[in-house]
Length: 84
Image 1 (spheres, rainbow, N blue to C red):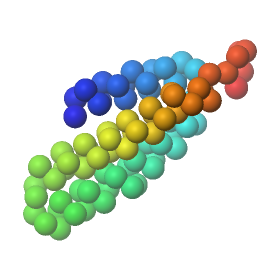
Image 2: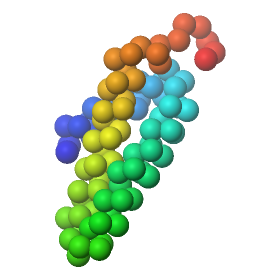
Image 3: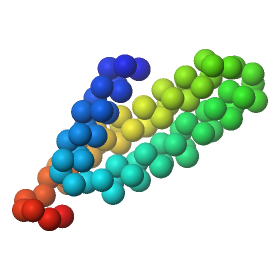
Image 4: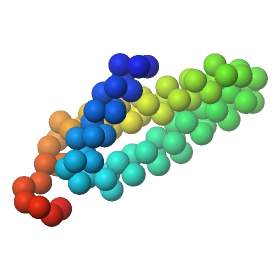
């Protein structure tokens, strides 16, 4: 999970610097609601303990990784000028 989290961290910095924070907010909320929360609820229901929580965190990071990589490759975040 660590290499993916590193890429997410770097792309967070790039997109924050570009002023694309609304997209980051939306992706983080989506990853939490569609990835992390359901995974930890399943982990709790099945009694998976801390491993289940880590799996939820891995899913959260994976969703953000895919979405941020798509955003970066699309170049929609790159805006010329001082304002968005």
